[in-house]
Length: 106
Image 1 (tube, rainbow, N blue to C red):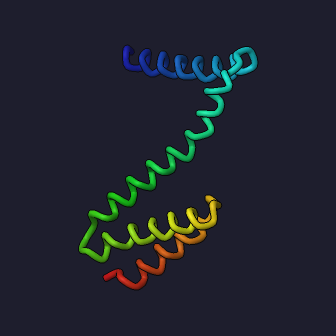
Image 2: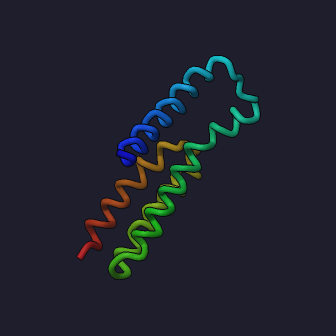
Image 3: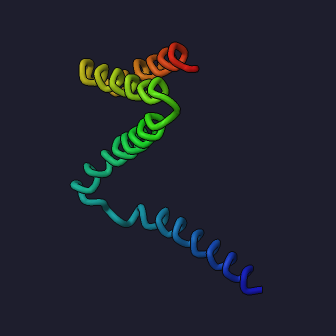
């Protein structure tokens, strides 16, 4: 019985936290500095995920498997630096990754 009580209490607590945030969103005003900083959260999270994926892939099987994501990430970074358009990372990086994988996969 105590296991079900813990599960029920966790569910009610989670629901209360989510509903509380939605209800408080109209009453609480976020400071401008926090609003500006929050616009950088998504790019920082994507960069962390991408860097982790490249690091894991770079330690893969053999030198060809390790260089493929590094070259693709470099091509994507170069394209974004040249054009100043974030979407170029996907438009250049993914085809580069596919091409490198097709050329150097065992």
